Amino acid sequence: MTLESVAGLYNYWVVIFLMMTGFYIVLARKNLIKSVIGLNIFQTSVFLLYITMGKVEGGTAPIVPPAIAAAQAHAAHGSDAGHAATPHVEGAHEVAHAALQHGGELASTTTEIIYSNPLPSVLMLTAIVVGIATTALALALVVRIREDYGTVDEERILELDRGE
Image (cartoon, rainbow, N blue to C red; front, side, top):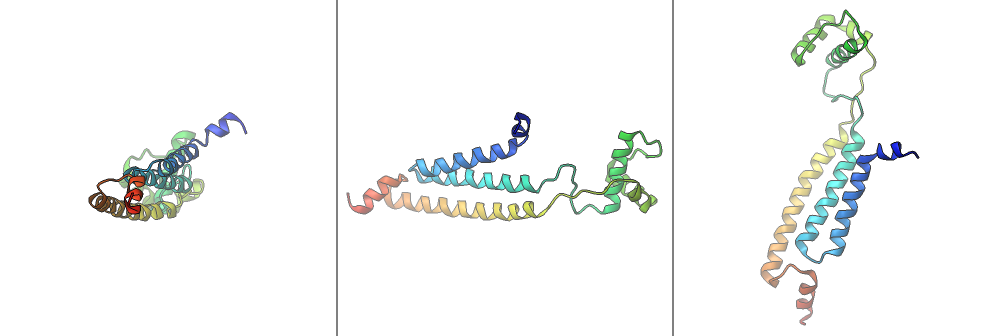
């Protein structure tokens, strides 16, 4: 592997760094609040990993109709390639209008449309909601533990439970 290929995977290095940081905080810290924060950091690294895997370079959202995506691709490729017949369109409304005017003509002159995978993003939105609820529950439990034991230190709580 070359240095460029390793540096090109920087998003995975960020994920690994966040994951190991969160894991270390959970294992090394005996403070319950810090443990909850470590779990959140770990969870965030998983979110980034899945979202990174779902992004396709040059891809568009799969909710964009093919005619509009083709018109956008045609406008983008036409200005780069020097096509004189490509009209300059700005904004989604003008692109949609151009796509409707030209019909299938634009789709046949452009390259294939690349879509990003929406599933990882949808799953991560659900996971974020579950993560927020879990964090709220964990912090509520920490508050109750603090009220009962007077501390959030794990070792001190175990000592109090043993009656030491």
